[in-house]
Length: 82
Image 1 (spheres, rainbow, N blue to C red):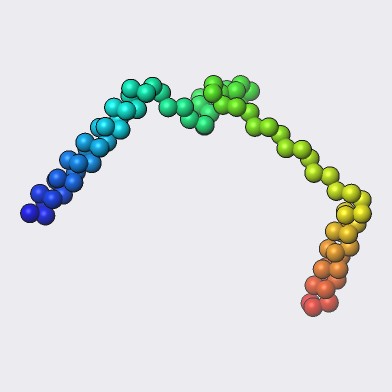
Image 2 (image 1 turned 60 degrees about the vertical axis):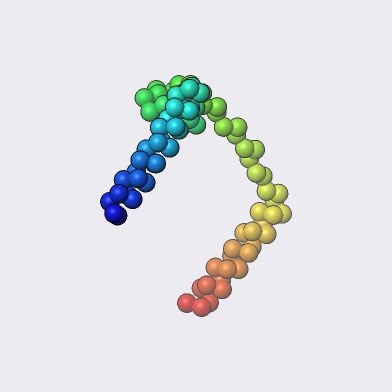
């Protein structure tokens, strides 16, 4: 009886997978966002958009000095605890 239930569930799953396969086959190819594995290193893969470069973040001299001073303060505290 348990085996009959398992077989019935398998048949339902197979039918569902066949429906999905038929849908995919009729709609055409599915585009992926990963480049082709055999693409040459210097060439762009078909269908893959290059990522836009982010603008470089620039710190003001005052901000850079504040960060450096804070790091020196942390180092001094760590050295004092040692």
